[in-house]
Figure 1 (spheres, rainbow, N blue to C red):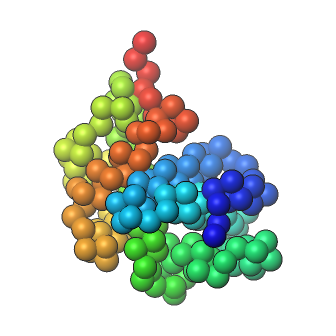
Figure 2 (figure 1 turned 90 degrees about the vertical axis):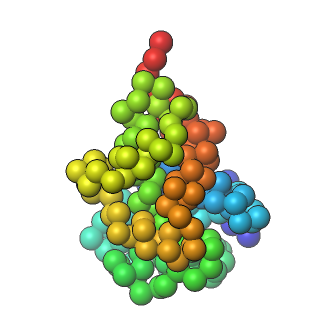
Figure 3 (figure 1 turned 30 degrees about the horizontal axis):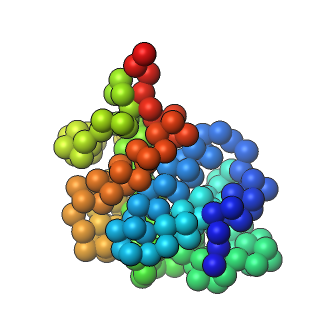
Length: 188
């Protein structure tokens, strides 16, 4: 099973941009919280989250087309590679998310972008972010406009969960790492 330590090691061979690394960490920690929700191994799900944009920095126009081969050569399990590829379903892959791991990654990838944007606007960052505040921002299509809201809603539907419940789980997972994610706020 893919460990978080191994995922970080593999990721460091491809990802150097600070903003992309931060995004991967946001997804990583949200995925850990989703794993806990489903009674799965948080570290394994975090590892998948950490590696999900493995080829994006070098191949943004061919995202996920340069992922399977190198990860396979590095000994990553086929089911883990499949999970990573599934987050691009309907966008850049035809790998449909079927497991809770895959459905979670598909949903959380975009969702964490809105959560991160919400947290950055608050004096205390994510530390006091409530799901109610998130929901207000989610409804404002101009806020974090690049985040694909229909995709997030489709992901929630695949999971059989309400958006507010998924968001609450992800916020909780990200809160635990607020300082590392630069989301602890700026209040003195």
